[in-house]
Length: 94
Image (tube, rainbow, N blue to C red; front, side, top):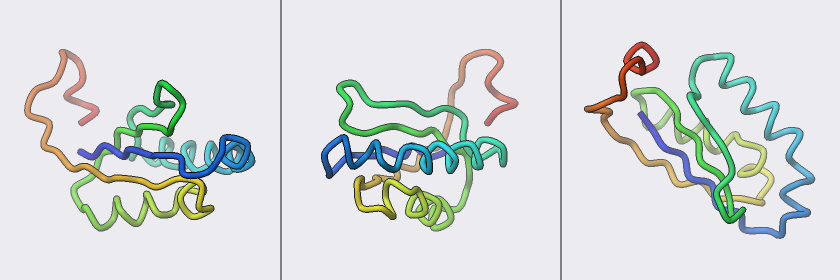
């Protein structure tokens, strides 16, 4: 499992200019089964994505392909963890 923590490094109007491409990128990876949940940080300084996978290099490459990151408006920290406990019903998703 991975947590992708995006941090905006440019003003929000520049981030918003890439929002359509970012959402399309999210949709692609939800459809592929890689992403489980995502959303904006509060306050709006970036975002968080919970991703499933085993290969750190693959997830780092995936994060780098985010239009926010490739467009230079955000950075992405990739945190890998082993899900050792889950709420009832989540096991099939992990």
